[in-house]
Amino acid sequence: MSQEKWSIRLIRIASIFGLIGTVLGSHMAGAGSYAFRPVHAHILLVGWLSMFAWGAFYKMFKVRAKKLVTFHGWTAIIGSIGLTAGMWFQFIQPFGVNKTFSLIFYIVGGSILLISFALFIFVTFFIEKDGKR
Image 1: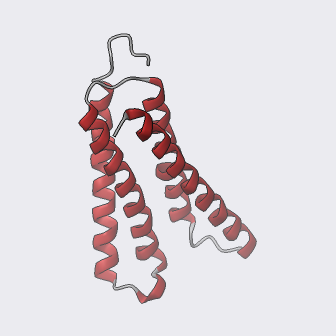
Image 2: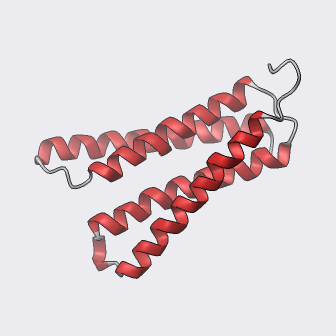
């Protein structure tokens, strides 16, 4: 998949996270309950902010390592969804989700996201010499 497609894919997913995060914030304000606070914060930080920043980076810079861009993109998406859904399972415990399952889901999602952040460091070292697209 081309870097251009990864750029728009990450920005589109960021916009979905942004909407979910702001809806959660509105819900908390309206309900007067801040139970979703850690989930809300992480949805906006890793889902909206990080995904948007990575998408913008891929739009601005040409990366030589195409497979690294793909691997980073998938770990970013899977990790962001996994971490935030895992936090929701762990802290809110919807649907009577098993505590062991929710903890494992949370840890695995967070670990994949951690790998994504580490991969992005490597991505920044594989940009074209002039740096621009």
